[in-house]
Image (cartoon, rainbow, N blue to C red; front, side, top):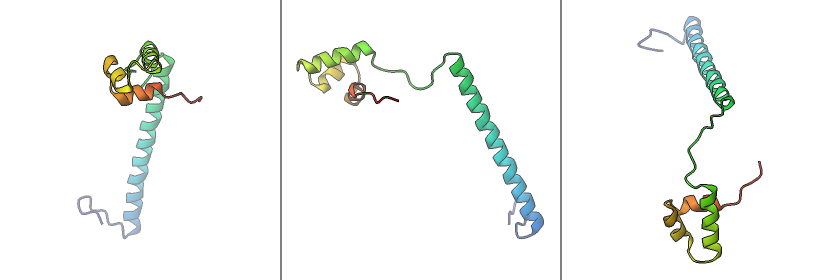
Amino acid sequence: MSLTEQIDTTTPQGRLIFNFFAMLAQFERDLIAERTKAGLAAARARGRVGGRKKLLSDADVRQAKIWLDAKTMNQQQAARALGVGRATLARALRPREAT
């Protein structure tokens, strides 16, 4: 039983009203999701890409590989030289899986 809206869900009328409100809420949620997907698709069509910008360029990753392969720096030192964290460098060096 809802005390503020005076809906008694123990009666058939109360269950009808409650289910109607739930149906409207779900409908609104579905509309929001649909509009969001349409907006993302339109942005992609305009060439926009979502997500965070990459901290390391391809040239930075190549330079880090050169340092690491030549053993002139360890991963921590290479990351510091490039101005990123060690985990960021490790992620960039990880082989990409084909999608």
